[in-house]
Length: 266
Image (cartoon, rainbow, N blue to C red; front, side, top):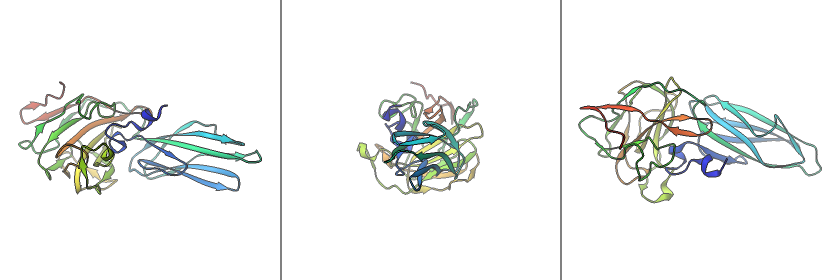
């Protein structure tokens, strides 16, 4: 697996979801926790989200140690849980190891139902910006089928489908077209009952009105639009994503607007 594939950069880890952690330092959906017992090591994955996360643990370097079970390995970590992944036992005179954890939100391999999504903003106050395959920032597979709804700052964001909030980030302040802001968008990720996830992103600072674990209903106000992260102006970035086995991918969907289905495909 290449680093680019593991991290799924373009809109940044916060939108793409897959994040790499090494030697206990991490950001994103899961944290690698290493506990040492003498010369032996126990590796855990700590899920930070209110929904399942798939992880893969691999050894970058392992000298004078054996892993039980062997690496690499994959596991699904339940919401807000810590799961033991492997025990590394030392047998050499100078054992050492360096571990890598890749984490992707959502259960692996779900089959999404064909659902018509409701417009996640008020019907009279939006313009469809980027649609599917948008050239500005929708080139990676995690956002290829995302859409941008251009609205005024602070517009209420409505749940397009019922589900459980598995991730909510509302503390970022900055926004603009500086690539360094990628991954710093305020967002809400909602897990649906078929394992698919709706992503609502670029919300304003303090514009996340739900918390991890909240159950949201269709049409419920869950946030307010903004322009945080890698963004050229106030809008709502919306996508339906699946965990396709440590790969977060977006999928086509249908959405109903005030005059019928939105023209999402170019």
